[in-house]
Length: 267
Image (cartoon, rainbow, N blue to C red; front, side, top):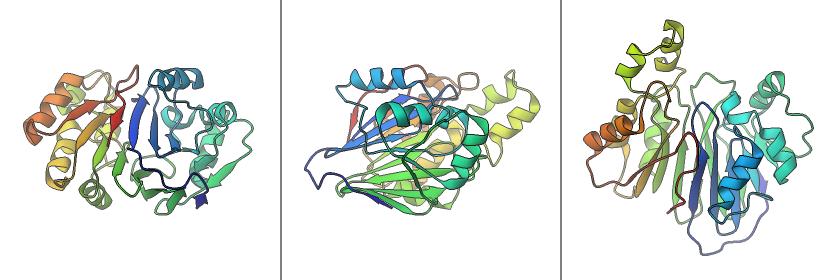
């Protein structure tokens, strides 16, 4: 799939997480005039305000790309589509599942992709690949502007083959670090939900993510942003401590907050 946009421009890729967690997710990536939104799980007003605080305009983004059909990623997709005027880029099964559960309402510009396909927006390529998370047709992404590569890896299910290659090729990684195993085991969730989170279709723990990064990252990796932290089964301090213990202190680590935006991060 190709959506025409501006030609190549010398500029750094920038990334902002507008919110991250089971309460809602949305990410923004910009490179050389191409502006992309990933997921739409918080209100359009909050997303616009948080991005404006970084001096960026959300309206007219080149695409709104949806990873999967869970509410915290897609429930506000119709609002974003109509409010911001961005094409909705989504897999067919994800859109059908989302429409069955949420009131997306009128959608006038929908572009479909199949995980594994490459999307193009001007000079920016977005590589997509399927994830084993328990959604209808989940996808993860690597954004490549010809100079830098940003991997966006959340709601992964379990460690699988494509993850290592994506991380090894990346200059920066946004990746879930969802839960601390001890907190999950001792926490208030019912047993069935604990099994779902830690199972093959759930999320990666702090330890799983840190070990995956340790064995997969190359010398080109500049920073990692830890995302989708559980409010009940993790803390920012535990996540950072685990990653620093496994990865050492040299690699810059950032957090994608549950109730606000991350710093604007450059590549």
